[in-house]
Length: 235
Image (cartoon, rainbow, N blue to C red; front, top):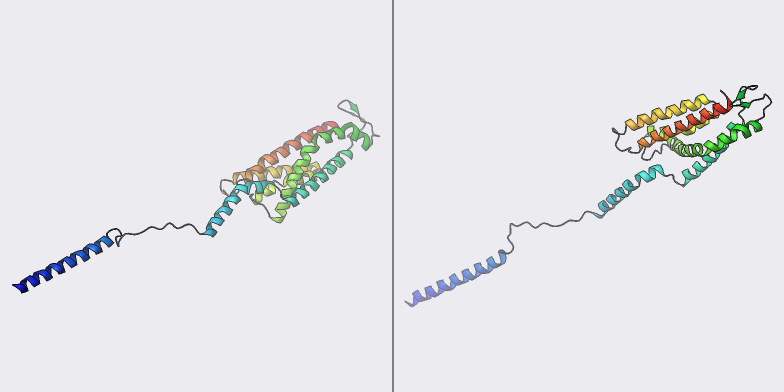
């Protein structure tokens, strides 16, 4: 009988120990299951954030960088504007009414007219009317001509950048012959149309459309100028 009691006591003690141990282990494992996956929030690398910020800055300033000149181009545009101013004045100052001995718009044209007389009578008013739009157009176009030569087209395609260069070429042609002036003006329109149509295919050149209205404005200036020029000086 005592042996049996000892066995009962041992069994009950062993059972109680196992029960407490299992309960203690369960109390440790229940809040944190071994199979549960923990998610960790990972921030993007610092260099990736810097690249994203740089790209965002480029996108914001792409249009501004494409249309606004740097300080070298700004100085160049001023020099081109001054040269255009003197070139237009010299062109009109050296022009004489044709033919002599007749009257143009009620003004009798003698064969003894001098350049200074023709300038005071016709050229000066024509110069003052068109000098500002001609100078501005050539100064802007000269920047794109230089960019075309250096292949620094910014956000423009090569075709659009070349189209923006034609007004200055048209003005240079004016100093030699009106035929060259009209030829370059029409070529500018053609290149601008091609660049504008190509925008759908080349999404990266979103500023190409600017070339068409720019060349169209120049063509209107040229038409008005030559119309008044031939009315004053004769055909």
